[in-house]
Image: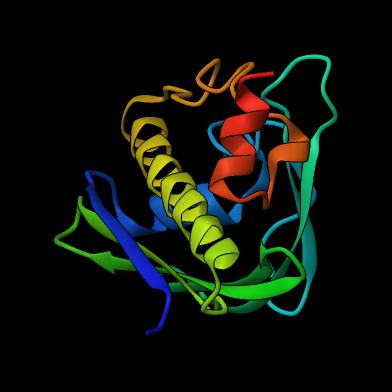
Length: 171
């Protein structure tokens, strides 16, 4: 069994505008990487994405390796999708008429373990949220993420198994 997932949505904006909202660190930080994005997603670079959802807690930061970019079509990233494991994230941008874009995000590369299955579920949840936030930001200028996760997770929860996360939430 191969652990993988794909999320998708249609965004009512031109493909160049939607692509730029992911590629451009200022725009990405306006709806997703609320702790900052260190640089544009240029092929061959490593950028840092940070999340600061819990006031007073440490910022959760990830190095993100930009493996491939095809402007307005494709972004391929590598990052630690599970503990001590780099997974592959592929974002595709498909023009659906002059004013619509279909965005698909898939992630692959997990080991067939319970811990990696748990991480894949958490990442699927995260990418589904990201794609909804991308839609709200590009179509309406809304930061859907603002306040959504405050106090719900700690940086130390990342890459824990489901029982560990549930246990941490009850403390």
